[in-house]
Amino acid sequence: TAGARDVVLTTSAGSDTETGGFTYTALPVVGTLSPASGPASGGTAVTIPGSNFTGATKVTFAGTNAESFEVIDSSTIRAITPAGTAGAATVEVTTPSGASFTDGTFTYVAAPTLSDISPTQVPAGETTTGVVLTGTNLATATAVTIGGQNAPITAGPSATSVTITAPNLAA
Image (cartoon, rainbow, N blue to C red; front, side, top):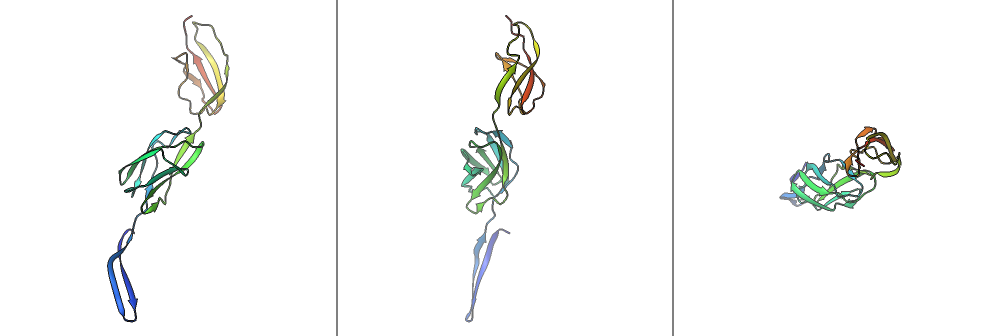
């Protein structure tokens, strides 16, 4: 456990003690991040809970330094994620005592890409159901707009498609 310990040196002529002469320090411990995911482009503000963060000198996501970080107290750090590659990234905190021996995980999410819209046109002034958007990384879609108007998601989303209702835009 962390704390100061006595050092005793013994020879044939006797011994000498340095009371509290050697200190074991606690390594930082990283808990579950909030939020636990964000865009691969970076820039997500995350809260890192844990312990032994006092004096933290570095926070990394998959080995890349955080854009910035602030030690709030010994059990909380706020950091801004750097850009990363889609998928899980180990989060490590380094203090003067060393690097965290438990690492949190942050999941980078790839940006969506649209490759097709079907149909691509409908009569003005009508609401049209069953418009299908296809592409990649669509599973986390939460909103779609057409011409600035909400287009409710009616099916999906899946990794490759989202079905919407095109809003009624007056002619």
